[in-house]
Length: 280
Image (cartoon, rainbow, N blue to C red):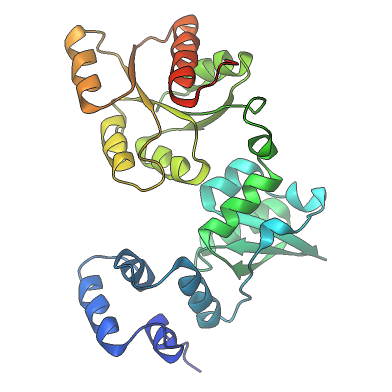
């Protein structure tokens, strides 16, 4: 039997009308995006509607409220926090040689194959929304986020295409008690920022794929992350470059090569001014 298309399922369940589907298909035609993405961008359906339709389309379970449950550590240990955040996945349970995995995109066969190899288990996908997975990751992997604001570890996202810069900055910031996540380009940084909602982002200005300025503009146009302060890094240590980046809206400017003392001082200043973090 041929698998039903998402549009057909949404029509059958009464979530959308035929007129709405026709309009969305016309928009989708030259966009390269999935139908669900188009409908969501048009504010016609919710993430939950998309997840339920995907579950029905591919005949996989739909799961909800996963953050409320407890999971054995042996299950959580199969997927590290960074992998879970980057791919928006969450391990649910082990059943013999099968790992039941909450996902937003059950079509990502490359990811399932990679995880199957790494965990030595067959992956059985379950569909849920990005918000459900973020909540579960926050509770079970990023427990420090749930502690009182006065005692919690402040989260810094470092974005740079040079591993030596990332490692040096990470070492300096961790020494001061910050939790550090790293990304190698603006596209990866944007994705991680949306997923983990860091308290501060530090990004190089010039990078391949998506540079720091493009990422900054994308952040400003994205609900939920537009207000995150962003510090710009640049090898152009000139007053003109600093002025240009501050005029763009960057919170601060740090010239490269990075001095660890200057870096931590600027980060602490940013946290005090934006988060009221008197502790740092």
